[in-house]
Length: 390
Ligand SMILES: [Fe+2]
Image: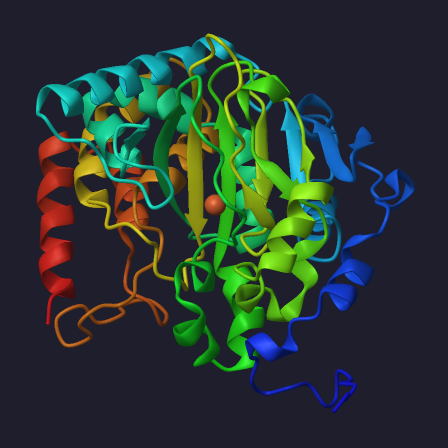
């Protein structure tokens, strides 16, 4: 039986039987019109391309963020931010940290498993956020002070976001992934995903922002990520991506854009996508995969943000002393400390002013304002963590 659903009568449950390739094609076979996105510089293969310097100089931050959010929700679902890291030296310094972490991982005999590739087929560093911060807090701070990362994260998630990072290095010959959607519902089996009501399928994409920073030049032959613009708008999509006809369609229709070192791509986690095959002879394709979670969501990885905040604090003090501005420090704090005060134990951690007790990030900001020693910060963060325990 064919039924039509309007916004006032939306379906309450989704199933694989709702997945219809013709309906999907109607949604995705659209053209992205540059005129609809005044801050964008180009449209390539229906993907919006932004010149990061132009966004930096735009003046009206809220208008820029509104456009990025629209591009990610109702538009193609993906934005490429050229020159997101204008100083490539900052990228290289973090690449050196990643290489050291990979070497340590190999020396310890651990091969990080991967949900899409066989162990050893590529190099993965899970929880690279914490590992990099503890390995080289200066390189970490200079990298995560990035303004474009903060811009697109707040555009999609608002404040209090939580950054997680995973390094992925795909060596020549490394195979493509199959098409998929990402966390949250994208990581659940069809059966489990279908147990969540339809409105949760609509909610899942706004809990996470998916991104990648290119740590080397990535021509198409090296296999940068393949995307299907507009596919994030397909409501039963979490139940569709495993179906053979959808997979075949993705093969014929996807877009794949080259990236230069320091470019970033951010996309709606419901976008159909897959990493490409590395057909190059000699490019070790290194990307920092960023999964940024809403303050209200649960990140996929556990991160010891207390350890990161302590590790990075002396760098914040030093850089502010050297003339870095408060916005610089605010971005580093946002990418490292926990910015949301809940969950907590309201018996031992009652809100004093207003409705919320201080978050880790609030404590770090206060420490900077009041020129605390690293030891004083360490003690206060520990005391805060203990107050939050039930
Ligand atoms: Fe993915």
